[in-house]
Amino acid sequence: MRGKKRDAWGNLVTADPSSWKQGECKTVTYPEQLPTTSIVVCFYNEHFNTLMRTVHSVVDRTPPNLLHEVILVDDFSDIDGLHEEIKTYIASNFMEKVILLRTQRREGLIRARMFGAKAASGGVSCQTIK
Image (cartoon, rainbow, N blue to C red):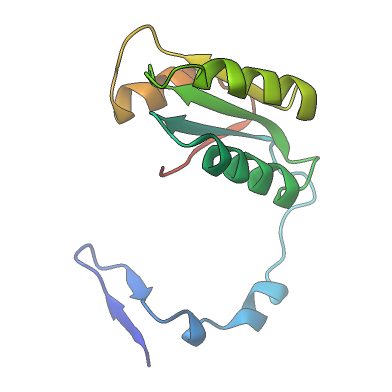
């Protein structure tokens, strides 16, 4: 257990990425048929470029057969023009893979996540920490 310890919940964790055994990941076998995934990303007044880097990273690094959709939930951001800028960019770059939703008022992280999860239609829903 060199470089590893237990957290408050008894889970085995490591703070040193160099101690991760990279080769072990290659030996794990996964089922042939995995469910598609909906990724929910909530944001409030996020910088446009930072948000788009996140979306590009998810789309570029997730196998297309597993990525059903990316749902962006704008938690009633008040930066002028942000929602429209994102909507325009998504329409010209991602087609149907990325969906932009907006809450009717400021909801907070948990309710915004639930708002996005209700709209998710993939086999599995993943929430990002943003």
